Amino acid sequence: MDFQKLVAVFEELEQTASGNKMREILAEFLKTIPAEDIAVVSYLLQGSIASEYAAVVLGIADKSVLKSLAAASGVEASKVQKLMQELGDAGLTAEKVLQKKPQTLVPVGKLTIHELFEKLHKLAQVSGTGSQEQKSNILVSLLQKTSPKGAKYVVRIALGTLRLGAGEMTILDALAIAYTSDKKNKEQLEQAYTICPDLGIIAETLVKKGLKGIEKIDLHVGRPIKMMLCQRVEKLEEVAEKIPGKKAVEAKYDGERVQAHKDVKGRITLFSRRLENITAQFPDLVKELAKQIQAKEFVIEGEIIAIDKDGHHLPFQTLMQRRRKHDVEKYAKEIPVLVKLFDLLYLDGHSFRHEPYEKRTEQLGKIVRKNKQVLLADKIVTDDLDEVNDFFQQMLKEKYEGIIVKSLSGEYQAGTRGWNWIKWKKEYVQELSDTLDLVVVGGYHGKGKRSGTYGALLCAAYNEKEDSFETLCKLGTGLTDEVLAELPLKLAKYKLRQKPVRVNCNKEMEPEVWFEPKVVVEVFGAELTRSPFHTCGSGLSLRFPRFIRFREDKKAEQATTVKEIEKMAGKGKG
Ligand code: ATP
Image (cartoon, rainbow, N blue to C red):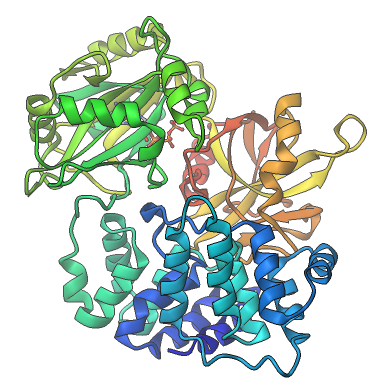
């Protein structure tokens, strides 16, 4: 397929400010894509060349892109650089520069999406000395084959800055509209996506094998599945209503969720809650898991926790220092970790997803050889609510977040906040509301002491049904000097010229700077009230919001949902 066809759709999407219109455009376009191209098109529509979990990093520096532009257009490097400074966007610079290309430099053939895809993969694989030079050469070969408009998008994809606003769920919607007639089928696609969070595979299976093929999609070792989540209750007594009889009660640790996969070749891959590949950050843990888990193939889950020299648990914030590309070994020594395992999803050729919790954890117990780094989650099994409460109090003494009550007969519900797992945290008991994880969608420039950074952030909750973000509060309190200093750089790469399509915001609240919904912050507030200013649900706003921390382990789509907030507000919690 000619890349230019995709460029035409990119252009159309860029002009679209409505989510529904975007779905329509995408559906019409996807209908016309042949089966052999649909996977590639699905990735490129997200501005990438693979699913997030595949951890394909293009790693081309801005400088190399500018060099490529000069080489492909025959325009002097200094002029390209100047244009880049003026326009502030490498994509627009590419378009402008290629328009200036002398007539003598004719395009070398036509760029197809497959050539673009394969060459970008090649570019991602280049590493070591001289790699930027090689990457730049590959980019030149692509730019020489495309139009100025095409160059705009090639460059944005190469730099990872294509922000069309079409989220994964929007593309799934469009696929459902394009290839199935019944709206109900969308749910089936979403269900498959929780087991296989790879739009390329989903799209290709749908086009080639229809919904029958989608039904058969199952867990595959090496490919993460979306993680099961917890519901919350207002009173501990409700736990007994939701999970009657005997139940497991586990400690809720303040660490990072991990899904560990081991394939038949003995390769271990670690995935985060966001389904990112975090294997490289925890070589120490990989080594321990390889030694301590007695199985050829497995998919298990647990919580990674930072510990001090004496093995005492350290807070989440300390663990986040292990999120790094450099000095990994040094930090592995400085901030050692352990893992508390609590689930088993796959073992030696057999999927345990649909098995009850009791069977999954029993099997997990059999394959884990415990040591100081690899342990099982602390738990009790009881039908007595007093015992549940005692265990909860004991966990608080240990400085854990609380407990998670789990149904013994419940299966693993991928990507679902269901009633098989219920959390009970210290905040609930202190009669405060739970904290909310909100997405930063806008910013207001700081004044006085805060000049040069942001004075406040516009925060939104996630609407799962609409795949949109609805504003809930303007957050300015609790931002420490350290956080304020960090904000401009942290948010710079998500700055947008206009409102992101998926954000719903009232005129009164429009921020001075828009951000692509990416950064998640944990926020504590006094109460939820009805307000004409915000768009969350039926017009809710969070009063006196206070910043607690960044939730680097969460994607925007994993933020607190509008539905959850409505529920909290409905019960007068806040
Ligand atoms: P919170 O913000 O309250 O931590 P959350 O939105 O991150 O919640 P929940 O689904 O409410 O996620 O809680 C599940 C999270 O709790 C898991 O993702 C995991 O990181 C953590 N956790 C800690 N201990 C356990 C455990 N024993 N079993 C399951 N999850 C656990």
